[in-house]
Length: 127
Image: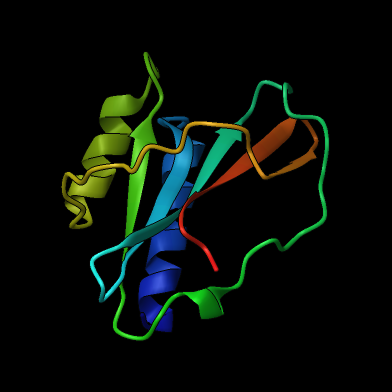
């Protein structure tokens, strides 16, 4: 992945969050050369329910083998007042429909500040 792609994803996701169209910043997934899958699921909250902040870390990007392909998927917020604007923004920027890996279970990390918070869940066999 290039720096340009990462900066573009950050811009697009930030814009969608500003529109409050998304409840999850991507399940960032990797398809491994072996066919396996790894993902990080980030659930964003703006309602103040996430109050703790854990230490950073808990995974290493070196666990993702060379030759893996990366994808970002957005889970839409149900009944978001500006969801159509958020969907149009991503369509206009070349995004398409994808599939999200199941990220059920207890988050391994939580981060919060100023009423905003993020839960992170790890999916797949991280080394």
